[in-house]
Image (cartoon, rainbow, N blue to C red; front, side, top):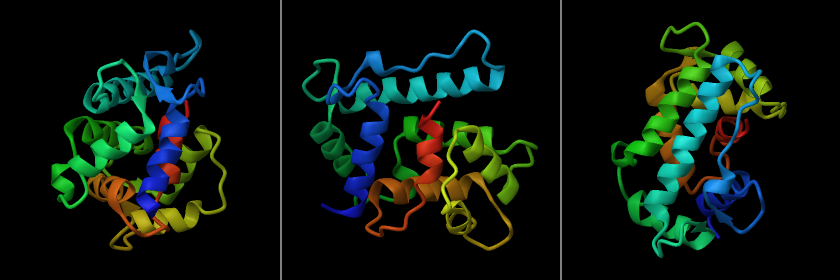
Length: 174
């Protein structure tokens, strides 16, 4: 199994919150009534992503996405394509996630903002510094939405095993 396939299966496991072997509407996230507006917006972004993923990948139309359906869809839609051809719902999820990371709304995410985002999702992995360096493709000390779109494409198609993954895990962990 290739590196991107393993990442997709890991994402599948994160989305399959009830551990049923399929992603369906029961896996939608809920926000506590006391959640901040930002947390509620994050829940809505994840839910839009899950619903669009189900709609796009559920080939047998049983209302559930199984691992093989998800892998087959992503291979058909992304592998061998350009980053600009990433489906709109994935690009929208990436943009929403970037918006949650960009605390100061400058259009760039600094190392501090990135670490703050990961910490807000209880991701305290020691690899955060390395991941930030891979996201910051030009070494400027920050990354842009274009950088995150490139990382998204790499996540779903890249053969390398050191592709940035923590941000995806943080994005779907509410």
